[in-house]
Amino acid sequence: MCEPECPADAIRPDTEPDMDKWVEFNRKYAELWPVIVSKKDPLPEAEERDGESGKLEKYFSEAPGEGG
Image (cartoon, rainbow, N blue to C red; front, side, top):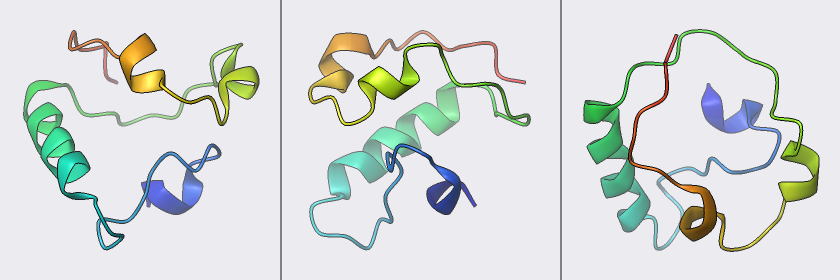
């Protein structure tokens, strides 16, 4: 469900080449973070960050969000 709905093309199928690191990344945080069960509005800066490189290093935090 998530992959075709992602407006920024940020969710990719695990069948693409070189996706092993992302499968492990998702496995780890799926166990640690709360489940997202509702859709929220995009962040105000979402459009300007679409396609930006290096976002994982710039913005990622291991601290879980609220979920919900």
